[in-house]
Image (cartoon, rainbow, N blue to C red; front, side, top):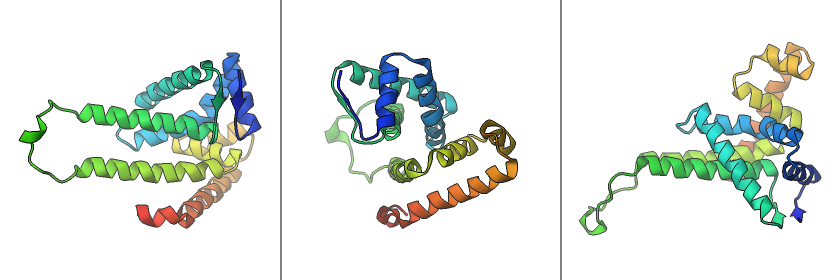
Length: 191
């Protein structure tokens, strides 16, 4: 099997998945699932929906890996999030479907404002995730736990730090993320 990635860590993680190493699966869950849960909850879903999507995304990833050559042109985190986002948008679209009316019987109408709003939120979330991926690993983990509503004391315990340090780092990481998003040229288009 040939695996091509931009980052050595991603290749090692994918090789671990192929070999069914529990540590690789656990790392995938720890690194990516919190952001998927946050995104789905912000887009009319629940944590259970996000977990189901994540499972589907992992199955899709395994199938791609089983097919032989696999080339990853972005980070593994972004790849899995893109799969989850596409699955969720498909789910939302399917949930909204009603009995089809022949096209010739349909009056011209403006695009559904709710659907347009969802697409705009999706674009903003993609911009957010792009910059979230650029943060350091510790920043991503602190913010992911924070967005999961894990108490600061618990985050400090998990990372072996003081609560004041975590509070300060969370603030710094959040500010860095906000600044990066606002400085992105696409931010003005999506505001």
